Length: 458
Image (cartoon, rainbow, N blue to C red):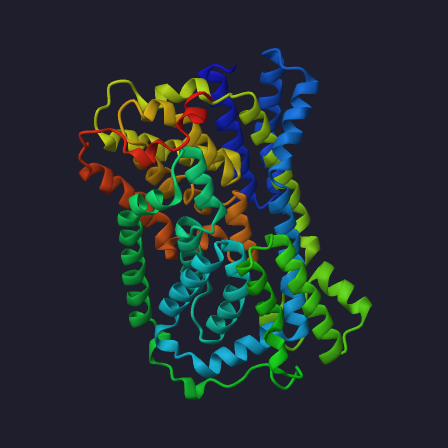
C-alpha cells in the first residue's frame, strides 16, 4: 500500500515526535500525533476510506483494552495498598528479615521466581516490587539500581514462563509448541541470566549498603499505622488470583477491594478520603517516601495507549509492513547471523513505532516466518523473536510496557535501563548464539511443523 519512502516518512515522524515529546517533557500523545496524521493521510491517498480506517482503528484499540484496564488498576492499587497499611507493613517486615548486603541480587532472584510462577511482569512488579523498592530506599540503595534489578527479574518470567501471554504469543506467531520453544530459548536465556546474576552480585559487593547490618534497621512506619498480620491480605489476594489464572484486571480489582475493606476497618478511612486517595494518590506529610500517584496520573498514559492501539490497527489491518519484509531479510543470506541481526533491528524499529509489545511479536513472527523457513528452522525464529521483539519494548521510553514499569516503580526508563542487564544482554546473547549456530541436515523437525499452514498462507 505504502512505498518504502512513504513508510520511512511515517516511521521517522513518529519516532521524532515521540522523542521530542519525551525530551521536552510534554504529553507523549502530542508527539505521537505527529506520526499518526501522516499515516492517515497516506492511507487516504492510497484509496482507503474513512469508514475502513475507523474500523481498523477500532480493531487496534480493542487489543489495548486489557492494558488500559491494568494501567487503571495499578493507578488505584498502589495508593490503596499504601493507605490501608499493606505497603508500610511489608517494608517494615522486610527490614527485619532481609540482610542488606545482597539486597539487589535478592530482589532480582525473587522477582524472577515470582514472575515465572505468575507469568506476568506487571503483577510481579506491583506485588513484590513496590515493597522491595521501599526497603531499598531505606537502605540508601539508588532507586534506578533496585528498579533495574526488579525489571530484569520480571522480564525473566515474561520471556520464559509458559504462563506468560507474551511467551504464548511468540509460540502462536511462529507456529511453535511451548515445550520445543522453551528448549530452543534455553541457551540464550541462561546466558542472559548469568550476565545479570554476575552484574547484580558485583553491584552488591561494591555498594555502600553491603556493609550495613540488619540490627541497625528499625521499623519506619509502625507508630503511624495500626499493624496487623491481615495487612498482607491484598498482596496474597493478588498473587492467589493470578496463580488461579484469573485475568489480571480481575486480580487487581479483588486486591484493591480487600485493601479498601482493610483500610476502613484498621485505619478508619472514610469513603470520601478513599475517593481522594484513589484519584489523586496517597500523600502523607510525615512520610514522603510513601507518596504515590493515583488514577488521575494515568489518564495521559491511557490516551497514549489508546492512540497507539489505533495506530497499530491501521498498520496491521492494511498489511502496510508486509510488502517490505522480504527486503529486510535479503535474498542471498545463507548464514543465520545476518538474518538474526536484521530481525533484531526490525523488532527494534517496530518497538519504537508501535508503542506496544504485542505488535512487534506478532508482526515479526507472522511476517518473517514464510521467508525465514526458506532457509532456517522456524524454531530459530521463535528464539530470535522471544529474545528481541518480546524484550526490546522494555527499553523504549514511550512503549506501553516500559511506561507500566516506570509508572509502578516511579523511575524513568533511561534511568533504570543501565541497571537492567537482562533486557540488553538477551539480544546480544541471541546474536552470539546465531553466530555459532550450525545448519542441521533437515530444516525442520516434526514438532516445528505445528500449525504451519495458517502462517504460511497469511
